[in-house]
Length: 257
Ligand SMILES: NC(=O)c1ccc[n+]([C@@H]2O[C@H](COP(=O)([O-])OP(=O)(O)OC[C@H]3O[C@@H](n4cnc5c(N)ncnc54)[C@H](OP(=O)(O)O)[C@@H]3O)[C@@H](O)[C@H]2O)c1
Image (cartoon, rainbow, N blue to C red; front, top):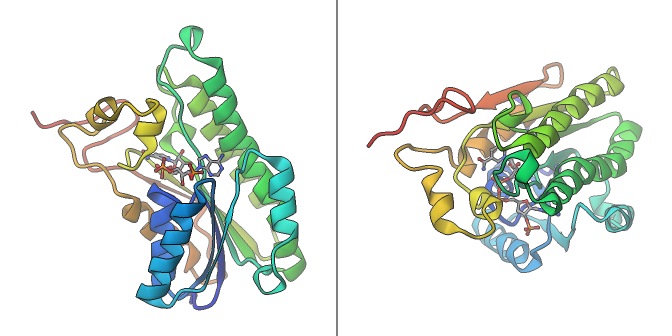
């Protein structure tokens, strides 16, 4: 098992859900964290909490992955001691709406494509060259089962996660023989703020998504991410699909009355 002690882990979308749980899981393993998201006050509070609990060293800054210039500048401006990023967790992402394509809100499409695809690309493009130079690193993308199957009313979200799956596979080939690994962790239903964001703050509608079943938690996914990151250098987890026991695929879900 590869130790994570003092490894530098860069997490996008660390202010909530899976990203926050990843920060907690990597902190437990003794890693140093670069915590980014748009809601800076949340990541600052998280850094403080992890310092108290585990003595974790963190660097925090506001990063909107949609903003190409901001991504370029913030990564180029990393303090010298934080530049050698070992692990990138491309987690920032969102769904917007659940509607038939021909009735859907186009603004939501722009947001999903700009965040889930272009944002992931900007961060990757700016961090991977350093990994290549050092001959080591690991990119872990948070994909989705929506990257393996398409479901009704989710055409654009599914398209973005299919794009993430394609990027993961191509990048793995681009980095072959260089010592930089590429994995994706692809969850089914995880109860986070995801559905609240998807339904524009409608908490009841968000709650109903998980009605009658036990969904995954952010921690379930974070444990899988840490598993990927701790394989010995000769082994790579290409992709991991994780669903609640009550979910068979994107369509078939068992709910207790
Ligand atoms: N929950 C699920 O069922 C599920 C299933 C499969 C895959 N996923 C994927 O898991 C990832 C994390 O989602 P989650 O479930 O943890 O949802 P969440 O609780 O809503 O967290 C999403 C995170 O992404 C960040 N984010 C969103 N837009 C951003 C932007 N433009 N720039 C930087 N950060 C941004 C948010 O931070 P700020 O708002 O502070 O910027 C937040 O920290 C996403 O890629 C999602 O597609 C989720």
